[in-house]
Length: 234
Length: 321
Image (cartoon, rainbow over all chains, first blue to last red):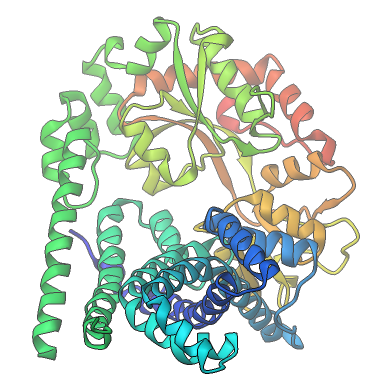
């Protein structure tokens, strides 16, 4: 099998994977925050917040990710004019603007999408915390935010590390969908490589599949151990 | 501990790679695709006629190989004789190959595909059009899923190793499409600092960056339609691909776009068919010559891409002599 394309400077494979890692990093942070907020709203005493969260999670979770990513570019940016980066002067300004704009649009799309799965994972974690805990917290005069923030969520998080790891692994692989609008990542590079090196189809496929296994496998192993270590013994 | 973890990871990756590799080779051998790593098995599986043609480059070697064979060896002609053809086309290129909302097909490539089929004795209603995206064309031909492909298929040396080409039936040039009121883009070298759109994996945008404007910002989308929408909205400055494809978009939305008209490459569109099928290739070439000589070649272009103001070029020399 011919792997000669690995040393071709036209195909920056490691740099492209770095693009996916960056997408994953920012999306994961954003999705964790938004997902926690959504889960909190889902169990809040305010019906409007509960309703909003339920509707949001069920609509976004059931929309194909490719559609969301393309909508970010074609609707939010092209039609509604949302700019997440500023265009600097000169030629480099245009290149940087395009890179940042697409990168941030993609991250925004991933956050909106992945947060629904994070929210559902955390909600299931909240259900593992015995009702007596929240009742006791309320009995000593805590407000809802305190009950959630000090008593319930810390225990809920410890129960959902493993499901969140699955969400993270899915997110790492989902970042390839960014190729629909953002070219500096591996799925876009793969399309270019397959166009130029059509006879090395299988070799290209193996390299990229192996790259993803190297990225995702340690995440699963590591977070699996963390989950065991911090689990609340009941 | 850490080392052991790493060891497990690498071992698993290797196992996965080997399994995938094995699957790939098996599949390639089954379908006789000369894919990477399986050349020996592929050659062993192919029929005698194919093997003798496999080594040579397209025309000369193939003709001698087909000399020994008979017309029955051409699956394309056998299918045509049975009155049914499966033709690969593009579904998303206005003016060339487009599937309309009502399920009908229109465009210059479609007209060429129909004309050739008619000459081979196949009724228009008996043609089965299937979508062949750029990346899957060689594969679909090799597997016999399509009899031939008419879909802005540029003839290149690497592609000739995997398929036979009839034609060329059209000579296109890479060009730029900009908004009608844009005046500062006059050619590929004026694109520095501009945003240029093309489809993921295509070589056309890369060519502009490498040869004309090294400081152009490249935007890649899955389809040309997305690029066209962004050019229309003014968020990207230009769209690049072959002029006749661009003319199709301009014809679809009159007055919105301007075709720059400075072609900077030659793309010979051919009809792709199974490797080694020279009898089929000759039959298609005869049909193409007739299409040019009876005027339907020009009429189809005028109907499909004429409204954009695109000047209809002369037919390729191989079809007029």
